[in-house]
Image 1 (cartoon, helix red, strand yellow):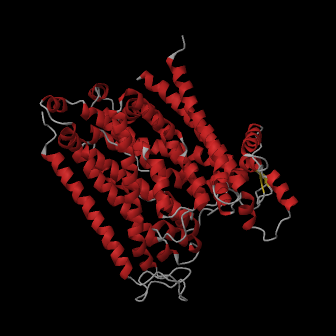
Image 2 (cartoon, rainbow over the protein chains, first blue to last red):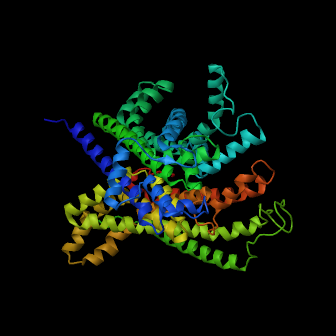
Length: 325
Length: 281
């Protein structure tokens, strides 16, 4: 007998595999369905020279566009399985290498921002939800409402303006200085300095989501007998907030994390563009600007796979936690 | 038995109709007004500071920022309202299909919502937008098609709850037609939730369209506050950010705060689900 949790995980994996397959097909068919020839579209922006038939055919083969579409699809899928995502002409490098270089930066931003917005959101939300309508709740909810209404790119631009340009205490772009220091400690320090503003912008944007979630949960939790009992026994302060409220919030936060993941990757994109941070968002954006469709397709497929995988893991953990009640 | 003909629900319904009518009038007035404004044309006076002639200064190609702000207002607001409406209509259609269509159809709809839920929609939208550079209509189609499923998860349980209430059974027993039940029992009960969802959709749509404008992925002729913010990015290192960045960013944030505050009023009034429902994105 298979335990239900495993079944649940398998069906979750099935949905995600289906979505991933559909995305791969879409990425394959989209450029072929639209009017115009991809080779000509690609060349029209970069070259004006007319190509001979042989050159054109060679380019076609290089782009995987020779033969009818079942053959093309077979070639495409086989390349994908082997991890060959194509070759980016503007960057003069294989797409997989470009992605390998940029994914760690994006993950660094997310990994640094996640504890900040989760803890700050939980702490603020619990404090406000313990006594809704009290002084702290009114101030904090007001502030968070305003923060939630500033689009992610605007808050990032304002941060950049405040701490990068008007009062230049922090670097305004990139992930490290132009010439990284050879001293590893100095280099880590530089990387950390460059990450401060992007991480701040990202957490600022995500905080509101978890603040409101924690506040709503804390309001309901305050009515539950175990909290009333704890308050009656004189438990208060740090212990009440972490051991009683905080621990009960954990499954809810995890469940929301899996939904929020797509939004988080969207926000990272804007933050990286504003701060010229060399992560995947910046890479994708430049691919769009350069009309580098090979890179765009490869990056979208890999990032989608990453989001789906993370989302599946978080979902599975959240389900198993929720079953504990 | 007819508990939800309570004054609160009625007043919420009344306010919501009022708010929708008011916003429609405002959008129309905005379009009419922006036609009478001077055109948003380039001029040799580039990057002028605010003055009597140009109230909010001019941008890098000599366009008057104030004129742009006012001209972009109805487009930005209208875009958000239309997208929100389209997503809501899709969601309600799917919810009704699931609620009335029997268990097979219901599980199919829920499955579809599950699938849409895990799609990294931002990546998909980027990919599509990069190819087709959507204009007004394109944005409405793209954003409503990728945004409706979230509403089903809220609307379907509420619809099912109301359908199985005893007042509906009672009215049916007494010979009321389905149409009558829908109009007099179900619609009034779910109306506050629908309005709440609509307002949330408006925020989402406004944020997303602004984001696309900011990335420069929309049709370049489509003037929105988001695209005005994008214009200011090149002038952050000069003084011009004061009049290029702050007005559109402020207008956009004010609009979003306004919608959020109206929405808060509803959630506490209509008491959607009895639980806070918050998703600022």
